[in-house]
Length: 472
Ligand SMILES: Nc1ncnc2c1ncn2[C@@H]1O[C@H](COP(=O)(O)OP(=O)(O)OP(=O)(O)O)[C@@H](O)[C@H]1O
Ligand SMILES: [Mg+2]
Image 1 (tube, helix red, strand yellow):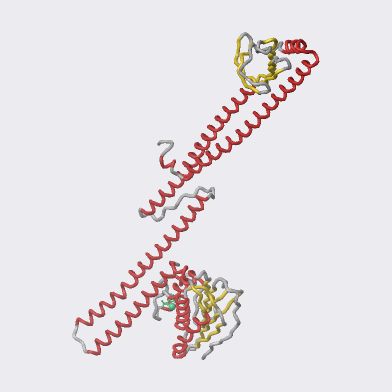
Image 2 (cartoon, protein in one colour; image 1 turned 90 degrees about the vertical axis):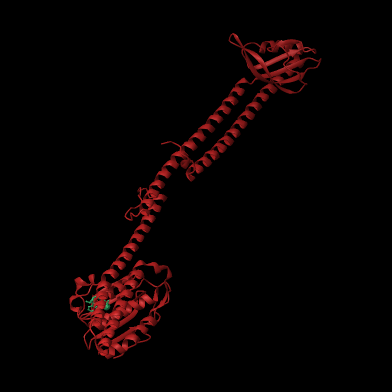
């Protein structure tokens, strides 16, 4: 594998690292330039101050002791390895005294100058740089007073070199670090991509690896996994609905078909055909009911409608359902009582909530024997709206209360009544869709089912029992 691939260079990490490297080089250079410039200026000022002090001293000597005295002082100061430079010449620039052999360059009196000169170091002559000032003494004599600045030149050179080295180092570190980070990033993104393509190839059980560092990639991976879990659950739900439809609609359809076939086999009178057709219509209705129930459960369980939840007026909805069932209850000799508070509202899917209440009411009336009482309540409990349907029937044993929520589960005693065992499954799916808590309790006697919704976001408290629909 190549260390630096084009893919690596094209990652945002690498580009960011290069950007930072350039930025750090610019700032290091600026810092160094400032330091360099300050140091150079400071040292140059010091040198000039030293030279000025010497000039003042020598001028004083000249005033007091004349040319002879000055010559003597210069000769004395020119001895040894001092860094100060002197040259006293006659008006024709012929040297009289000093440690410079000749006037270095054409200059004007009073001017500062920079020049190279040869300085004896050990047995060799080495070229050094000097800074000096030119002065004309009364009588036309020229005096040059200077200072060897070779050390400063060397210091400046060093600083320039260091600057280049540090710049190169910052660049190398920036690029190297960028490459390392980009490689690390790419490796993890690659593993995510690999998992995703395996999933796209059909292996829905695969999950994006989580490194455990809880960084942004881990959070992304976790969210992806949650999403995949959700998709898998939806797919499983969908498959289950399809399986259920295939499995549970096949036998009634076969039954239907055989009955029609048997009817057609022999010549019969009109009444017999009529009866057969009436039975067929009734059975088709049952089939349609089961079919619709399965679809509704699938819809509620998938949660796809979660985004489309709207304000539901429970008072109104439940009132309507109770009104619808009142005549049938009376007719079959059951008592249906309702106790519905005003202004109970939730966010939800109105049709699914109505259907859930219909299913609960249907069960209560179906499994309660004649003369039994069915009670519907809607109210709030600690700010949470709830719907409750209770009856005086046989109830459901505690150990069966969870199982009856599954699809197609019907208890032994209920086999004689019509039904497909889907009613409570829909109630459970609707509760789940709305984030509501579903409880099945003993009503002593009978069953009490309560669906408690999450607290309503509107602070409007429900006023207790404005309307009481109570009928015998
Ligand atoms: N109020 C109740 N009292 C006694 N048993 C009940 C009551 N409600 C439900 N059950 C039991 O739970 C089982 C499942 O109920 P569910 O409503 O899911 O199906 P179903 O009523 O049999 O058929 P469907 O509602 O699809 O017409 C019922 O068959 C019955 O045995
Ligand atoms: Mg039912």
